[in-house]
Image 1 (cartoon, rainbow, N blue to C red):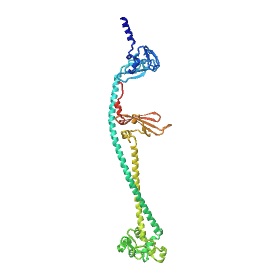
Image 2: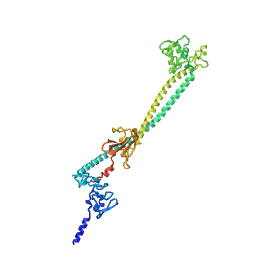
Image 3: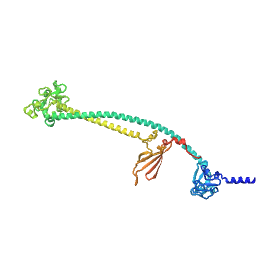
Image 4: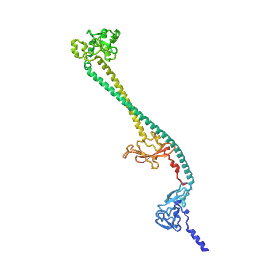
Length: 459
C-alpha cells in the first residue's frame, strides 16, 4: 500500500504542465509536453526536460529557453491578455524594462511593471471601431462617386458623339466652301484673261480716257455737251431710249458741258462701272465698234468710231465683272478660313476628349472625379501606371519622367491611396534621392473586402 502511494507521487512529479512554461504561445505548447526529455524544435538535439528554462542555452534555435535571456536567438512570447500578443527578443527578459503590457517579461527583476493591457486594448478597440466607421462612410461616399463617375462618363460619351456629328457636318460645309472658293477663283481668272485678251491696248495706254472723250466730243471743240451725251450714250437696260436733258446734265455732273479733266473724274467713272450706261455705236445705235484698224490709223482718218478695237459694252462689262468677282473671292476666302478654323477646333476638342476617355479610371470609373482636380501639390512627373497589388490594382499610382534630378535620373513619385471620408493629400516623403512617396486619402480607395475581412486582432 505504501509502495503504491510512492509510485503515484513520483509519476505526478515527472509530469510538467506546459501552461507553466513562460514565453510560449498556445500554438507552441504541444512542443513542451515531454515527460522525460525535450526535443529542440529544429530537431537538432534532445535534452532532459529539466533543462527547459534553466537559464542555460542548450538548443541552437533557443527553443529550450523561451522564458529566459540565455539564448541569443531566442524569442519571448508576451500573452498580453486584453491586448495584442507579440514576441520580443529573449535578451529583453528581466532586463529591468517593461516590454510586455502584462509585465510577464519582468518576472524576476527589480522593475515594478503594471499590467496595462486592458487600457491599451480599449484604445485599440476604439481605434478599430473608428476605422470601421471610416470604412462605412468611405464606402458610402465611394458609391456616390461611382454613380457620379458613371453619369460623367456618359456625358462625355454623349459629348464625343456630338463633336463627331459636328465634325461630319463641318466637313460637308468645308467641302462646299472649298468648292465655292475654287469657283470664285476660276471666275476671277477667266475675267482677268478676258480683260488681258480683249482690252490690252485699252488698259495699257494712257490715252484711253482721252480716246473715249474724243469719241463723245463730236464737234472736236474740247468739251462734251448735253447734245453729245444724248447722241453717244445709252442706258444699259433701255438702249433704244434717248437720254433726257436732265439725265444728260446729271451725267455731266450738273453742268451742260465738261472738259477732259472733269470727264476723267465723273462720266468716265460711270462708264467704266458698266452698270447703268454705255457707249452707242457710231451710227447712233448701241452695239459693237469696228475692229479692223488700230487707234492711230483711225485717228488719221478722223474716224472716231473705230478708235477702239473692241466691244465697248464688253470693256465696261468686264471692268464691272472684275469689281464684282474681287469681293466674291475675298468673301469665299474668309468663309473658307472660318470653316477650316471651326473644323480644326472641333477636331482638337474631340482628340482631347478621346484621350480622357481612353484613361483607366478604375473598374467603375470611381477615379474619374479626380480628373482635372488639384490638391495643392505641384508635380512635374507624367502619369505612368496603376501599380497596386494584384488584389487591388488601384491602390497605388506611379508618375514617371519628371524633371531631371541633379546628378541623377528623372524624378518619380509613387502615390499610395488609402481609405478616408475626404479627399486630401496627407504626407510626402523622399525615401531616396528624387524618389517621392505620397499618401493620398480618398473614399474611392475604400474596399468592401476590408470590411468583410475585418481587422485581425487577438484581443
